Amino acid sequence: MAYETARGWRHVVKAFGYSMKGFKACYELEESFRLEVMLLVPLLPLGLWLGANGVERALLVGSLLLVPIVELLNSAIEANIDRIGLERHELSQRAKDLASAAVFMSIAFAVSIWGLVLLPRWLA
Image (cartoon, one colour):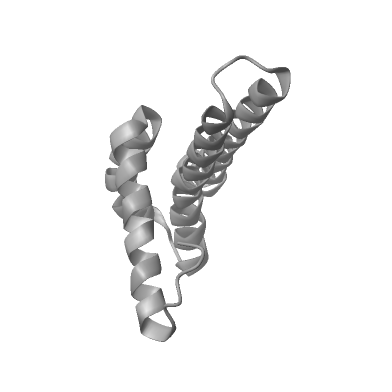
């Protein structure tokens, strides 16, 4: 992969293929990613519908999209740590815990955005 000489559109097409392989692998191997995708499917159109303007729609949808992005990065970190070795090591555990914390923070971010955008309408 690193030594391929594809240029221009061929490079874009190959990169797209690698991305699709990554999505497929994460969906098949990571239960958390599957759950996040299942929640994303109904919540994305809901965010578009509930947003009063473009900025609100962007915040609602963007905060949702951030969660699977961070989950993909978390899964990549975990796969790399497991590739190095399955024995327990303090630094390996710390890397996995930090990546998991990033996923948690992205979920907290999405929940807070939805609350900050939608709650004032329902409380007023």
